[in-house]
Image (cartoon, rainbow, N blue to C red; front, side, top):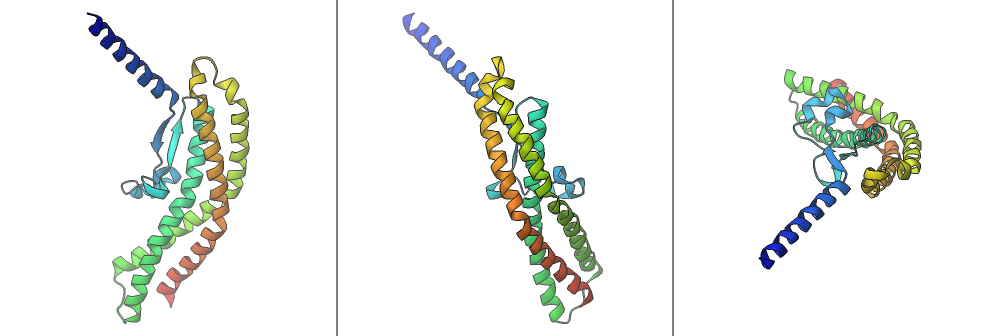
Length: 203
């Protein structure tokens, strides 16, 4: 009987610890390209934000002002990351097409359409990336205000989420600064790649 009581107590403590651990953690969902812009919905299936260095997850803490900040921060970072991914894929396309053109082989209608679509996609992404620094600065100010009010906001039953929220806000701020710092290089890369696409069509 004593062994049974000890076993039940152990199980209850284990369940309690598991519940506490779950409560202290903020939830996360992966960002999708369609959240950066609906025109990139076709990229959701092969989600560039799903793994590796490009992984981007949106934190959810259950309070609208905080959840909205985390979504907006993830989208800004995602804008820069997605542009970089698309640029690398487009550069590969340009290299392949250049070889074909230098061999004197004409592009098929499907290939011409692919080049045109790549140019359109790049134009859209470039316009969005150009707005990242300004939007990022505003978000950083919002994040600082949220962090300053976090202790008061996450009190009582919500206090258990505070460490995860503070960590998430700090991480988001660092990523916003990094995204802004990457913009000049990404825009320069985009200009070169866009020029290469134009040359394929006109050169």
